[in-house]
Image (cartoon, rainbow, N blue to C red; front, side, top):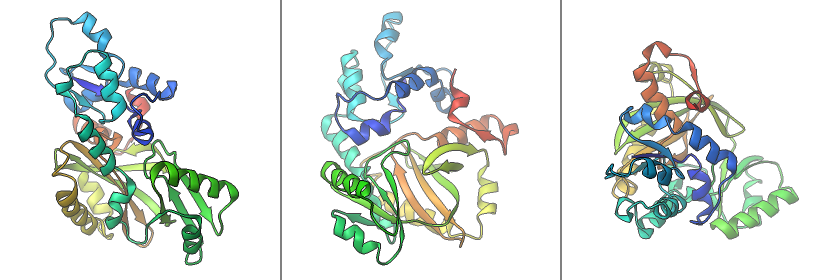
Length: 298
C-alpha cells in the first residue's frame, strides 16, 4: 500500500505526532494520491494519510504487508496507527527520531562550503560583514517556508525570526545568496541512482519540472561541476545516510552562472522530481514539456 502524504515536510518541521497540517495540504493529498501509481504502477493501492480506515471498510479481507509513504514522519505513524495499521509495518519512535535528525539541515553542512549553522544574532551580523546577501533557512522546513532573504542588515523581523527558530530548531542555516541559473536534482531509490530531474523555483519554492532526460541534462551541464558534486554527494551518502535509511531520496542542486554547482538540500522521501523521471520514461513523447504536481490531481 502506498500513502501519499505531501504534508510530510510540514509535519517533519513541526515534529509533533498530533500536528494538524493545513486543510489545503490534506485536500491535495486526497485528490492527488494517484501520483504514487506513476512510480509503483496501477496495481498498487494508493491513499492519503487519512484514508486507510475508509479503504479498510471497503476491503476487509485484503492483506496489507507493506506501507510505502511519500515520506515517514511522526504524524503519519500516529495517523496510520489510529486507523488500525499494524505498528510492525511502520518505523518505531527511535527510527522516526533518527530520520528527522538526519534531515536537519545542519547534517549536510559538510557538503555546503561557506554555509554556517548560526545560533545568535551576533553570528549572523558577523557574516554580513563578509558578504551582504545571505539566505537564512530553518533547519526543518517545507513548501518554501522557513526561508528569509537578508540584504546588508538584519531587520527587526529577521532578528525575531532568527531567535525563535534557534529556540525551536537549535540553529539557523546561513547560506550565501548565489547567482543561480538552474536547479537540478539527483534522484535515488533504495541507494541506487534513478536519474536527474530539472526543475524551476520561485523565491525558493518548487514550481515545476521540465521533462529532460539524463542525456540532455548531462550534455547541457557538461561545463559545470555537476559530475564532481554528484560523486562527492554519493560518497557522503554512503558514509552518513544509507547505513541508516534505504528508500527514495532527492538531492537538490543549484547551478550557478560561473559553472559551479552547490548542494541546496537533501530530502529523504519521494520528490516530484522522482515522479517526473518515472513519468517521462512512461511518456517519452512528453520530453521537453513542463510537468507540475497539479497534472496528477484528479
